[in-house]
Length: 517
Image (cartoon, rainbow, N blue to C red; front, side):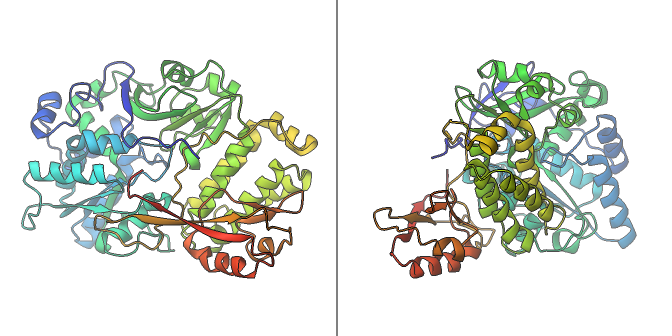
């Protein structure tokens, strides 16, 4: 079982805290404490706010790293051309299982996020601010913060602010899925590509960005461009939040200056001096081998040069006693099960990618390795959202980062190490694919998993033929099951495979889970 990350990990600041200021003294900063720590917020026009975002090189902190100033300009231009009132959406749907930075901000420093969102709404003349969340603590904290500002339930206020709760799934953090849920639809990508700046919330031009991005904007407004750039890298000033986990004594959300050496961050967090690899950017990010991790700095530019990614700010150190390909296989199966099941590259391509990598790990040789590369090439750029691209990047990075381990599996049948299961993958894959958004998602959730009664199994192989997305025939002729729950779109096939098993050895086990990890 994966070592689950706590919803609220410990926090640590390397240097003087900014985003985490005051959290060493309070579990949560209410409105009064927030103003005491950060002071009042100056207001900006759209032109002033755009100039500030450009001056501090503010980029999105949710994965893509898109320049915030360009979003501001685009929304303002479309709104003016159409004579439409824009909207602002805060993406706090932290779907990556290795990231908790936004959960910490929203639960413990919600007013800093709201400062940035409401300031942006005022500069754009927006009529709505929506905060999307997936966890109960974040939802409760943001609702309380809106009430502390006198904004809860005030439909006649200058800005209508509300919170939308989505299921805890990777796909919930996809921007179009959040917008669709905020409009009362299913929390799934709609299958068409359209920029939120042109047609977002309710069809209005919408500025959508990550929770940390808005918090950074609020800091920049208070500090000014020069004060904000007093720390950090020349091209990427300020601080940023990382979620550090894996081979460390405890997971932590760490605020670091931009450009700090990655090895120093890991050392301060208690990681071993030489991990065999480091996952950067989460499950849509990329693995770094030990030499690359040793020279990398925490910035978009440096990590990209080393083959990594800043992504959602997740950093996971991998110890030497676990199989890195085995760890990647587990995550690849989870990523396949997290698919919305709406398009072919996800529905068929990601299970094929995970299965091919599993075959490589099991010693199937060069042909299996070639299938991995073919499957990755087949899904890239063809999905309704960025999920297949992120999954392919993650898998291919493992082949580049762990070449010695890959050679051992391809040439010798294995590396001789077990898979410890260090990636904090939730056991809820596929559980909420059809859940509507907006409420509190009450009640427990049920997850179905395939299981085999090995006292009955005779290795007929029919289950692998009927359900190749989740079952493969192992080298010994017996089934090998994906380490993931059965997603909604494969439930019918899984039930058919269970019914048709000649030895009655295959079954679906149901596991009941609470709504919180």
